[in-house]
Length: 470
Image (tube, rainbow, N blue to C red; front, side, top):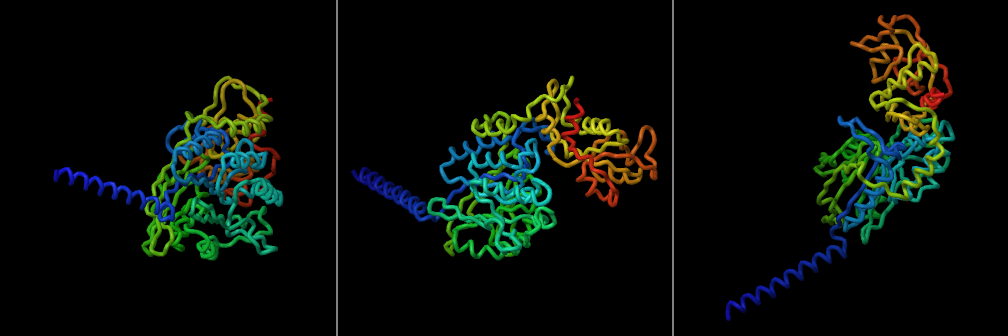
């Protein structure tokens, strides 16, 4: 009988303990003592709406990424999580890619469909066109967006006001999440940003942070600065405990834990480039002694956007509709051109089309191969998505050697071996002048070509390759 009473007593006590635990859990949830939050993030997608091949991580990843697959993955994670999920992008959404002519319209339509919560302004958001047209395109995309575009360090010089909001506050249940952003200050040198004033990012955050902290429980910084500048920001402002970055195209497969001089911890995340992977951060935020939310735990990963992921039909329809005008046949190939073969193949096409002595194609300017059989305009646009114009210029053998030795290029009409450029079977004559064709970006910025006069051919690599099929 006594053992029976003990069992009943322990049963009642266990019930009270369970009830107390449930009550405490509900209280914590109701009053916002702790919050579990998942953050999904992308950066530096640069118009990569379609799947693509990728080799920069040491493996050949075939047909990864794609905005329609990304949409499926984001929606799946939202369904699986039993807590709030926020979706961010940290800039460089468009200005290149197969549909660059559309000036980011389709990219923003896709992002509207996916449902981003906040987006940082990247430097490439201003370079959709040359001159004042670039800023006009940015304003068009700003009007199109159904999500806040943010930057705390870009001002209209005439009015002294921010060009876009410096921050936003997101209501997550009973919790207010503040999101601020800053943009790389090098945009101050762009012709497209004339009439704007660009503030130092650290100073901009230092000025705006107290105001934002007064309006929210926790602050997330979305930056388009690059990893090195993010580290500086973390050291300068240790109150920032979570930075989601972009611009440097850095692959952080786990959030980087940075301990500042004050002993505080800042977590920095970035998801590489082009949207082949989706960044995911899972954080638990709990109230500290000051009554503010602080990170109790932080875990993260980069989730592959693989071929097996079924594209979201609504997003795929947006992309297909935009791409339809570019599906005309421009030629055919007896055999496929692989991604590794494509730069040299392109250089050969350029040299023959322009009748230059040498054609130089940066490896980084070519992003896919070409299939066997029918070749469409879209295929060529995917292969050569950057809209730089080609230029012709005369270079000496010495200048050519310095240029080729300073980067990774594919050549036609020349070979590079053991640090020496060969024209035919002989080393390039140091003083002889050779007619070379290359994209204008490299002609302007390569130190080896400083002060060399060049003439624009008025056509992009993509368009000249298309013309070469005729």
